[in-house]
Amino acid sequence: MNGQKIKRRVGKYEVGRTIGEGTFAKVKFARNSETGDPVALKILDKEKVLKYMLAEQIQREIATMKLIKHPNVVQLYEVMGSKTKIYIILEFVTGGELFHKILNSGRMREKEARRYFQQLINAVDYCHSRGVYHRDLKLENLLLDSFGNLKISDFGLSALSQQVRDDGLLHTTCGTPNYVAPEVLNDGGYDGAAADLWSCGVILFVLLAGYLPFDDTNILNLYKKRITVSEILRDEWFKKEYKLPVFEETKERNTDDIEAIFKDSEVHNVREKEDQPTPMNAFELISLSKGLNLENLFDVDQGFKREIRFTSKCSANEIINKIEEAAKPLGFDVLKKNFKMKLKNVKAGRKGNLNVATEIFQVAPSLHVVKINKAKGDTLEFLKFYNNLSTRLEDVVWKNEDDMDDAK
Image 1 (cartoon, rainbow, N blue to C red):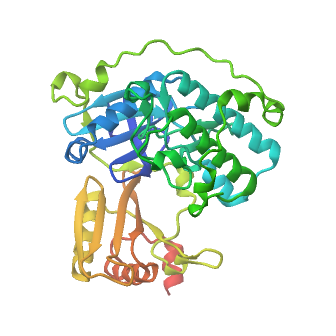
Image 2: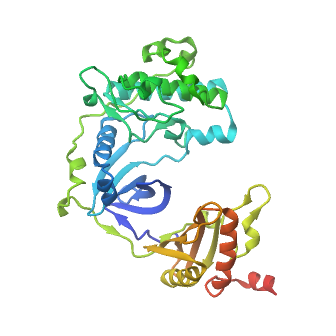
């Protein structure tokens, strides 16, 4: 397995597993084949971007990130385009969201919260100095690297200083309700820097308290309370153990590639290739359950699981065909793309239509892992579906000698 190569490639990047997915974009782990460095590959469907008139927003996001090179901001390396896709190559950040740290561990100690807040303010101050206002700062958009350092991400709603009107204010209402400044909700315009700092204050509150400060219209009582970066930097609490970051200032960045990815010229297109399933490494194999043992669906601590995996010695195409043959009689529409499938129950259940996603990974040339998970709908209905599906896939699942002994 160590000598196995990832078959799908976009330009010089070898593409691996999906690490995030949204309405208009998917983020995959990838590796620079020239340097071996890991990156995050954000993939957007060009047809959807144009259909929903998102081109301007995406161009702004890319242009914004090209202006910024700061140790506490996710770095953009380059952008590329094919006939059907837009690719944004970003720094790969491994520590997850700051939101999950609060969700799992609760509020932070003051010293730890202050360190994250210092890094946040440094990054925000730098962005403002470059004429960039994030406008959607929240815990979910703050990532952590392997060293526990904060990284601001997702500049999709950002604004540049060029968007400021003659009155010196921004006028587009955007952001997340719990974090957004009151004046952003008005029609009178707002200062982008002050709006970002309001969100920073909400973030600090959550870090220290473990919950959001604003859940109702009480936010209206705080319309006139504001603070500036300079005031924060002079605050005695903030200055404790504060260290000014040392980094190399970014130079002027060429923006020709931003316009190029929206053109159909072959000169600007990168090659897309995917002729076999994504390989799965040994570390990912450790968590696999055996065969189609339904006992693995239930965990005392977690309740019903939403994902099952099994191994098969069949070819990837044969597995796909078998799953399709088994799912259709159960009332599911099947959508296939590469080595992934989306199954949608035509009949609505207790929580709407049950949607099931499957993906095939290659462990060895003659061995595959199939992952089946509930994408939408009721978990008990998913369990019933999988129970029915399993009886139809008995000839697909690989059973070793231990499994055969257990079945006797």
